[in-house]
Figure (cartoon, rainbow, N blue to C red):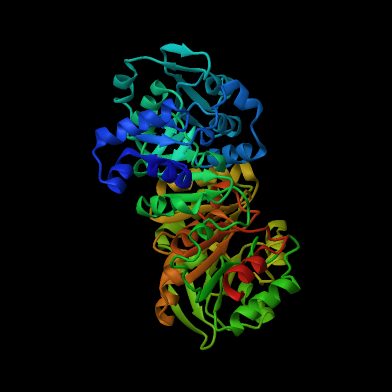
Length: 526
């Protein structure tokens, strides 16, 4: 029988596929399906049939919790990092989503129909919990009511996190009809839908389809999905996030339009140099191998030129450098300025006065081209920065300098972390035109809002004639996010915060584990 032969080859076939293959009507196909099912040769699925052994029994929720793997724990941890302060989220009933609850420490509002999610978050003071009511399903531990649709139709979520009982080529399936109804509702009422599923769920059959691939924005999983799903992901622009650090998300599409890297843009602190502020011999060798292949290696940093040029010399490269996180770009071969964008003088005056009047423990630094201006070079914060960067400060009256120097590229405020955090809040209220961020807990950096690492990179690649799809950017901190998003291949260091990693295409090892050299070997040199 041709249908049975096809079923044994494909493991699962639809009614329409058999109609097309045999040229028969849907009624005839349906009768043949029923006969196979009655004989025990097949089982019914949504719109078709499958081999009996291809359908695994879906475990009850409590049983699945005890069977949860370390991979589900990691999936949940990564998923939690995608929730931002103030987000309105829906969390599905799922053992993997339950692990998200265990890692959630961001101030947010969560809707859920899961008793276990609500219980996990009940002692979390950062989260406001809204539990959907209705009849309780004791097997899978969720609530459902026919009026839930009207309640959900009045809500639009920032993010929805879903689990899955099975993932087939036509969508995401669940073991309970009422549960599938809820997934469908919330997926259509969210800015972003993230599916959390371990790799075993692909080609796993379950009973009720709840969500289409067109509704999904990202899938977080533990292993590369089967190749048969590539087309679904590409057509629906679904991002695949793998939990294993160092494994490329883009490797899933390996062999399909992978672009050759023509230039590398690297952050310095926490990326190029290790925790001892040293470039390792392995990293030097990898950089030199890349440049010998004709791939420019460009240093990108919040540092001043004098803090970058010694590293440039140590690496034996003469590429352009990006200083002050994009506010100043210098051609090192000709020693000319490619791009320069200073801070508005009135903003600098206002920041100086705010720090001096309200934050006595914070020390302010002004940077202009290759000048680092401070009032007290012996201050412990200044000495610490000098030891890290190797740059030399110039002593001057800051107020006088500000009033007589119209082009200032950066302000650096250094001090206790609590006061730095308070200063950040104060300055952001009155300086919307500026870029203000913490490069670490005790450092607050301030640049022009019209300058960024990605804009500076654009200046350089335009000179080389490269496309952004042809560049690699690598970094470890929040001020690297815009260039990680801009580059064709953005790589986060293993020591980067989780919030930074989520914007990267790859996550490599840390700066103390040769992360940069590994990335160059894998993506440029090999």
